[in-house]
Image (cartoon, rainbow, N blue to C red; front, top):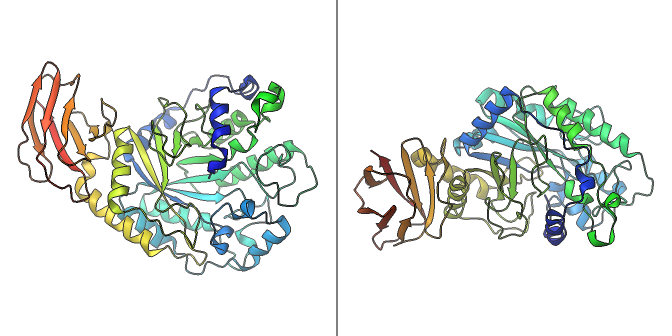
Amino acid sequence: MIKKIFIAVACFVTMSVSKAQYVKDTKPYLPSAENLEARKWFTGNKFGLFIHWGLYSILGDGEWVMNNKNITVKNYERLQHFFNPINFNARQWVDMARNAGMRYITLVTRHHDGFSMWDTKESDFSIMHTPYKKDIVKALADECHKQGIRLFLYYSILDWRRDDYSYWTGRTGKGTGRTTRGEWKDYIQFMKNQLTELLTNYGEIGGIWLDGYWDQMPEESATRKDDDVFIDWHMREIYDHIHQLQPQCLIGNNHHLTPLPGEDFQMFERDVPGENAHGLSFQQISKLPLETCATINNSWGFDIKDTAYKSLSEVINLLVRSAGHGGNLLLNIGPMPNGDIQPEFVKTLHETGKWLAKYGETIYNTTGGYLKPQPWGCITETKDKMYLHVLQAGAQITLPSFPLKKMKKVYMFDSKTSVPAILKNGSLSIQLPEQPLQGRPDIIVVIEK
């Protein structure tokens, strides 16, 4: 994932994007009927599991360790010879996600270090050249199809290892020891070939989650000419290739820009749409399906030092606020190098699943509230119900421009007791009693007459 050192640069680029970036990406994109149906499914199912796993887990220092420690390609490749996740169990992983109330899984197939987690014919830097010698993508894909969980595939378009990646114009991977400059067109073809494998050999894929576009954003945009600002990523060519192979497959790109033609959903890193507490989600909210991606602790890949685990309350509030914006939550885990998942992650996911087993109707198949999330909490809606997720004890709730003319009932979701509510001059007012929330949102249900 992207690091905070690039926030200011990416923010500047978002506000003043060069025309050169879009020269080859402006032809109209008309999603297929299958794609539009997949978008509806995605929007309604709200909760997914992100899995960051690869060679970097061996070092226990996050997925950016190759870049951050300036490990050369030659030295980093040695990790391949002792990556042997003998405890990996696809069934247990998918069971865990399904029991957590998750409806899809997004698996990192290739991160910025260039290591492929499947049986690729395009590179010898892959899981098949480790002592493990088993296709991780196939194992997880087979189990997802068996259990009815949709599989999305993360794919890095940035590569710290290959010579034909334009590393000399990029902003990361400068210390990996590359001196030869290969052909950029060869790298584009390599990516298309790998994506063809992923979209041909593993059954129906829910979506492709791309990352790394920001590596080619300039450090000093003001000093560059338009033609120097962006390399040609061939994104529309790649998008069309993906859609040709699997029309229903949704495409998202973690570039932190306004969605480009050919994309099917928009993601926000570490923040719910419309918020930017972490400085990575400054893009405007589009009309595409939305997704928040976030971590349970502070790391994407396994970090043995990171014990800053989110509480169950924090995870639920993140899920609720994402849904309140009409978006999904993609919650990340970073498995350990032996294939085990940290018990802290397992516990949090189990408890989240218990909460969703009871309150899932207030999250799944809802739309974001007519009113954006407020300090007191947020709203999710169905055709005939409105759910007020109260995140602040003793809150005085005022809903201006209330869309319902009449209400049949207003009551607490848990106790089913009526809640005093006054609808006057187009505003609905609700005063909650002063009582602790027990770390979970109180939920008020409003039923239209």
